[in-house]
Image (cartoon, rainbow, N blue to C red):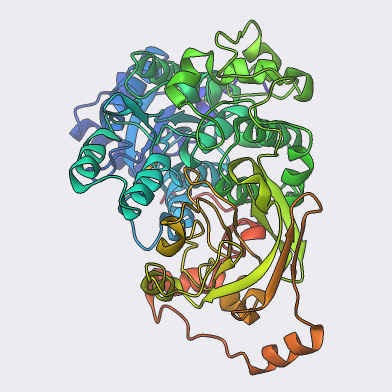
Amino acid sequence: MSKRKSPQELRSHRWLGVSDLRAFGHRSRLRQGGYDAADFAGKPVIGIINTWSDINFCHTHLRARAEDVKRGILQAGGFPIELPAMSLSEPFVKPSTMLYRNLLAMETEELLRSHPVDGAVLMGGCDKTTPGLIMGAISMGIPAIYVPAGPMLRGNWHGEVLGSGSDAWKYWDEKRAGRIGEEQWQEIEGGIARSYGTCMVMGTAATMMAIAEAVGMTLPGASSIPAADSGHPRMCAQAGRRIVNMVWEDLTPQKILTSAAFDNAIRVHMAMGGSTNAIIHVVAMARRAGLPMDMKRFDDISRQIPVLANIRPSGDLLMEDFFYAGGLRALMAELAHTLDLSCLTVTGKTVGDNIAGAEVYKPDVIRPFNNPVSSAEATAVLTGNLAPNGCVMKPSAADPRLLRHRGPALVFEDYNEMASQIERDDLDVTPDHVLVLKNGGPKGGPGMPEWGQLPIPTKLLKIGVKDMLRISDARMSGTSYGACILHVAPESFVGGPLALVRTGDEIEVDVPARRIHLQVSDEELARRRAAWAPPAPRYPRGYGALYSQHIGQADEGCDFDFLAPLGAIPEPEIH
Ligand code: FES
């Protein structure tokens, strides 16, 4: 551990500690805010990057929780300043929050850089906020701790437990098939989201919060605490106390985020049966930290780690059950023999120290290695002539009969075409067809919307078909399930082979062999390629144009090319 910093070595000293006209201006403005020298002189200034907003109900409590964080910072002798950042509310932001993850990362980095901040508390949880905040903090490089919003309470309808997303898809299909009516549908709408907090299935939010903890960026156990539990504000205050000492210790993300730490996080991801979206985010986070990372790492680890967390969509239960069963510390203790226990974390201690003494209280929720939730892996990365740079699938959430499948393609050129066709009773489709959606990728969506769980055609739903093979360059909500092959790279919009598929082409998928193959000759594909014309750019100006020019493909983590490299950026001039 580095020696403790002196007050003169604090970054904020340049703004607040020196004796010149600019520092006079800074201090006089703090006094304008009612603060005195005793409040800030020689103290670490902690920026609280808060993604609370009126339109993000996953983060409703973060407004109050920021006060708990401040309480902890003040107790430990720091000076808190809250810096609001974009909220990226998953249910409301269109076309996709993924379009804006990098914008949040930029905002986080630049908020920290441009203000007199020595350390950061990152408050988020709703899907893209976790990677966005952490990517920005990595690039900024000052000590940072992540405070997860925590999952909401279980949903409830007529005594049935409802899970975010997963049960919406399930009951929507029931409604489309005529098995429930409008009144029951309305009741479900009122019962599926009962409290503030993130989605409480193993969706992207729960996955990314767990990954943030496993990689060492949260306090131990923080990611499992339900948002409405009194342990949550206590964790927030503790994080506030801890960040002040992290500043004195100069415990930066760079010291925590090693290749071994990311491997630990991927192992946890697999054991949780985590969202496929996390693959994109972890690749981006690791590359921000200057580490090599690609999708193959997930496939390699997936083969070693079974799904242990019995949480939907791979299992039956919800994050609240997971918390009562011992939470992430207990799961990591179950995985301990596979983890690098020497990795450093924000506590200043190792992963091994943090999980010492953790116990599984409910072995039906957190399963032992010899009794996993699923024998199918949580993630498979396939390659072949249809996805030369890879694509991903979640075998544990798919009908096993579709893990080896060959069938004719039914191609939709874009989402609107799919939406206009899928309900048709005369659609020429059988359960053996492979549904293909184009133009759902990073540039084509744009923003890789979560369209990858294409609806089962109504005609097939009515005869009881529950799963089909579906292929796209889009993403899928972590709350979704089904034999959906996602993130096909390169995407169709930039001329990836997916752009060349036509209805009737045979597609063969062999998940155990990690293979995806379009049964069309190379000569025919070359002819189709010669006839293919790139679509017009989506955006003529603005952020969208910047995004389109610089966004990477899914296998690269979808970061901007100018943000991804590691490297010091000059500190702002203080004149
Ligand atoms: Fe916010 Fe799912 S909508 S976490």
